[in-house]
Length: 266
Image 1 (tube, rainbow, N blue to C red):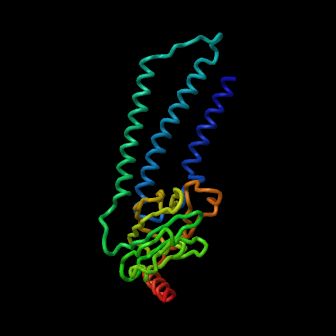
Image 2: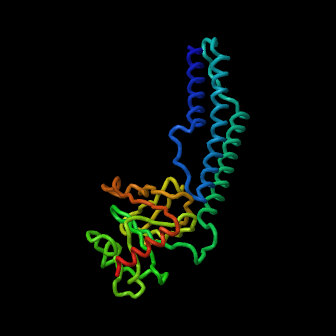
Image 3: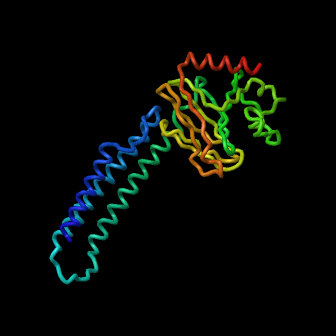
């Protein structure tokens, strides 16, 4: 029985290590500048916990083999020094990972100071769709009126855009987030009803949108392509269908797309 248990431990440990080394069911390819810090933090945590896991399995296997012939079993009250030691080690690792994670989170949260070259986009989450608003040539977001919200009409009406505000006349509301590659994008996240969560796995970006708050987020995409935007917060019965597309295009294509949007708004 002890031999069978030891074999099972070896198989389990080796199989687990292989799954991580081979990166089976791994994260999607990274397509953002700031996401590299998330991957480093993730890899560091997995490495540390992986070493702890292997050492624990080795210790368990040694004890199984060493006491395989002990009969009858004897009761042990434990070793106070050992308990203090591994509790202190666990606490140290936990605190160190927390501090490192806090530093990474702060870097991602604050990032570089805003620049006039940054693309500003307002993101509104509502049951069960995402809407993206661009400020237009004047660089200003127009006012919105909650009493004017009509989700059934979609587009500008879905976020209650105030047609009487001069700054709102050139605002463009789309159902896809179109951004230029290698350019900083700053998001202003809003929610109309419940908490939603803006999540793009390839960007390593996940940020809650909370009703009544203007939540800031930013990213810089490095690869052209289409990427799915999902809601990572259980927001109601239609949560499963709340998704949109992030389209990363060249700067020329983005300028062309902006002109098309402006022409369609006239």
